[in-house]
Image (tube, rainbow, N blue to C red; front, top):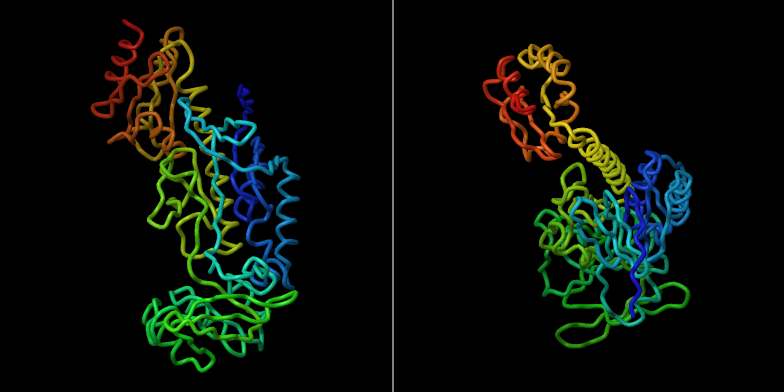
Length: 418
């Protein structure tokens, strides 16, 4: 008989422990949010496999990826973030607006979820590939690893924008950049400008109609065997490193049907890192975005954590202040710079005094709390000032036309039954 899972309560669940997830953890922990971070393999994500990171601000000398990520992790732990080295099986929405994060043994009930699951580069599937991944000769980021290959010979696999543009970048460092292309001679998938630049670059050499058949080497990669797709001929190639640019696979399978993904499986967000589901955010490489680097991941994580903190505060204010209590409520929605709004403030104070035993009057400043108003009535009122009436913990009506002192008096009397 299957035992019922234990359910634990947290403010925020972060799924994924790469640079973006760790940064989100640092910000959430510092905001005193009870935060749990899930990572199924290695804390630090893909950055831990980068031998040297030279373009992350704040360090004069190159940083080992794993060393930099350990600093991120230690900082998150200092702010009280809990780490759980386990796989997340599913995320479900609960009726009260919270989310349920399911793992193999325990369920976690949270107010907000930050998705930082990243992704993985598509591999060739050639023989011995796993033996040389990341710091042993097979790389996926020219920006990260180009300097290591100064005056060396490298092979690029792929012919799209990333392959050709990163290849051009590598020519600033490497002695020779060879490109294995699956297509016939002269055919690339990259944009025309990149193609023209690549064909004109004396350091770039194209090997047409080829795929990788095998990787060879001792401690590090030393040789790649290419196979001609038309003749089957095998071509040994001595190289110091290989860069794979044949696609990227975001880790979003468990979120299909829960949040909006684009045609390639990346999570669609706005600038606040919000998905199309309230209280769920996405950061880092898993997002649909133009640049995937540690520096951009850090920015994403910070933004999402601040957005989640604000969301949680607003939801609590909404439930515990604006919609709670036994008395009916008159919520006066106003904007401090609006003269009409300011003129009716004395009337609100009078109503508060007159009906204080039977009615609660609250002022809601849209300059500070626009999203709270949107949460209350589904959208912003068409005009200000406006009044939202609340009865038995639910919005009864939204009035935003013809509001004057007399109308406010009438609405208050109707709410208290006079």
